[in-house]
Length: 273
Ligand SMILES: C[S@@+](CC[C@H](N)C(=O)[O-])C[C@H]1O[C@@H](n2cnc3c(N)ncnc32)[C@H](O)[C@@H]1O
Image (cartoon, rainbow, N blue to C red):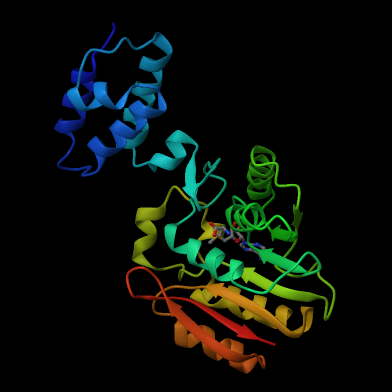
């Protein structure tokens, strides 16, 4: 049966109470099928192919099962670029763009040695290297599955100046060799109730023992791997600035600074060896 746009809007409206963004997300999904803005706005007639109808059925069953829109579309926007995503990787978050902006403001050049650890989809490393073609980044992840996705994104963007390697954070780096370490590691406590809303994303990307084990592990490696004067930057939870700063201080880092996100919450901390 060939369903109309009105039918799908009515279905979405009947679910709006429970899924408050469903209309917005359905419009986005229509656009991904090539339906024009005018037809969507007027809820006008559109001939969906049999394939589109199947996709719309899948959209509704996935959406109502709580699967995030980015996984349904296999697409996420970050720094103005589109990245392939699926349940093997964390969906890039807008606040993570602040780390990229900070890195792009540093006096780095083609000889700088930069590691991004816990790369997931590769969105941080790839965006930096697309914005500044002089830079090269080696990005690591422990998850082979995540690295497969990162490689897809490397190919999509021809980001030949980013390379990926499987490693336990900085384990594959050499002492006193790095100018910059970047990381948005997992930082949620394993018993945090917010995890219920994130149950479609991989737990390796979300949780860390006590919420702070990843920071401890990376800082302990980075103090050896960085050159004297080299920098480290961490994204962290809004309540973790003091803990992260203390970890960095205890390992001997200096000039520790925390910055806020768009909502005025402490979001990232950087320091110098
Ligand atoms: C919060 S996600 C960040 C993903 C991506 N960089 C972003 O900002 O969207 C953390 C990433 O760290 C990876 N990870 C977890 N433990 C790790 C470890 N011991 N060594 C390297 N990567 C690890 C996870 O697989 C996940 O991809």
